[in-house]
Length: 387
Ligand code: UD1
Ligand code: UDP
Picture 1 (cartoon, rainbow, N blue to C red):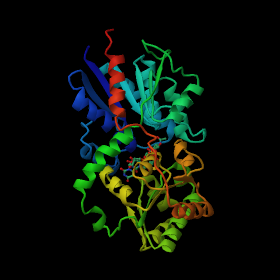
Picture 2 (tube, rainbow, N blue to C red):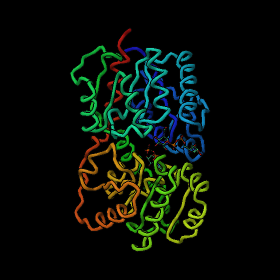
Picture 3 (cartoon, rainbow, N blue to C red):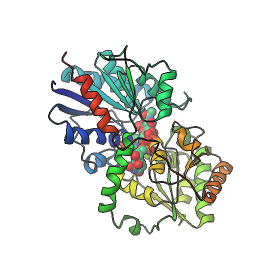
Picture 4 (tube, rainbow, N blue to C red):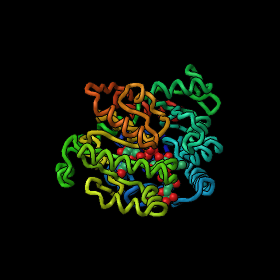
C-alpha cells in the first residue's frame, strides 16, 4: 500500500475535539502508512476555544493556520476557501477529512471537491430539516461533494439514502460514485477515552467549585438563533435562574464568547443580574476534560449544542434541548431529551417532566466506541489504492 497524505481540516471547537479521535488512531495504528497534516482555518481563535484542545487532547499542532477569525458568513467562508485552496495546491494531499457542519466544513468541502481531491465527511447525513440554520446548509452541501460519507447514526444513514446516496455502490469510489457508511460516532469514542483521563486528572475539580454530585444543572447556549435574539436568550436565562432557585441547585454555565458578547451588547442588566445570582456559576469556556467532569455529575443538562446533547446521553443525563428541532432525533424519541425551544413554559415543563422520570434508559445509539478505527480503515482502503 502506498503512503497516504491525509489533511485534517478543522476550525471550530467541536471539530478540533472530533479530529482528536482520528489523530489518535493515526498515531497509534496507521503511522507507518498515513502522514497526517492539520489545517486550522482559525474560525475559532481564543485560547479557550482552540489551543486548549490541541494541548489537552494531544493533537499535533496545526501545520497551517489560516487565521481567518470572525466575520459575516460570506466573507468568512470565502476567505477560508481561498486559504484552503492554496494549501491544497501546495500540499497535494491524497485525501481531505472534514467534520460536522460549520463554515470551515463547507469552505473545505468547496475547495477540495473543485480540485478533485477525495473528500471524507465525518458526521454525514445529519439533518434538522430547518434550512434557517447555517449548519443545515453547510452539511447538505458538504455531503453532496464528498466521496466517503460516515454517518454516525442510523437516522443519518437513512437521510443520505433518501437524498439519493446508494448504499450498494462499489469501488472505485469518487465524487460521482460516493460510498456511505454507518460508522458510529467518533465523539462516543472520545467520550469513553477522555472520561477515564478526566476522572484521573481532575479529581478535585467539582469540589473546588462547591458542586455536589447530581445537584447542579449544566447549561450551554451558543446557537445564533438563541444568542442573537434577546427575547429568546432572556427567556432561557430567566428559566435557568427560576429552576435553580426552585430546585435549590446551582446552575453552571460555561458561556461561549458569542453569548457573552450578545448579553453585553443587548442585555447588560440581565448579565449583571445573572452574575450576581448566587446559584448561577458563569464560567469562561472550559476544556474538554473539564466539560466531561461537569457532564458526568450534573443532575440535568440544558443545551442548544449538538455535541452536548449527545454527551448528555453518553453520561446518562436527561437533557432539555433549547431548540425547536434536533438532528439527534433518537434522543427525543427515547424520552431522555425534550425539545423545549426557548419558551419559559416549555423549559419549566420539560424540567418538571424529566425530574419526575425515574427509570430513564440510555441505549447505545452511537456505535461501539471504535468509529475512528472503522473510518481510518475505509479511508486507507480508498486512498491507498495504487493510482
Ligand atoms: C460555530 C458554528 C456552529 C458551531 C459552533 C461551535 C458556523 C456557521 N457555526 O458557531 O455550527 O456549533 O461554532 O462552537 O460555522 N468568537 C470569539 N472567539 C472565538 C470564536 C468566536 O469571540 O474564538 C465570537 C465572535 O464574536 C464571533 C462569534 O463568537 O463573531 C461567533 O463565532 P462563529 O465562529 O462565527 O460562530 P459560532 O457561534 O462559534
Ligand atoms: N465543550 C467544551 N467546553 C465548553 C463547551 C463545550 O469542551 O465550554 C465541548 C463539548 O463537550 C462538546 C463540544 O465542545 O464536545 C461541543 O461544541 P459546541 O457546543 O461549541 O458546538 P456544537 O456541538 O453545537 O457544534
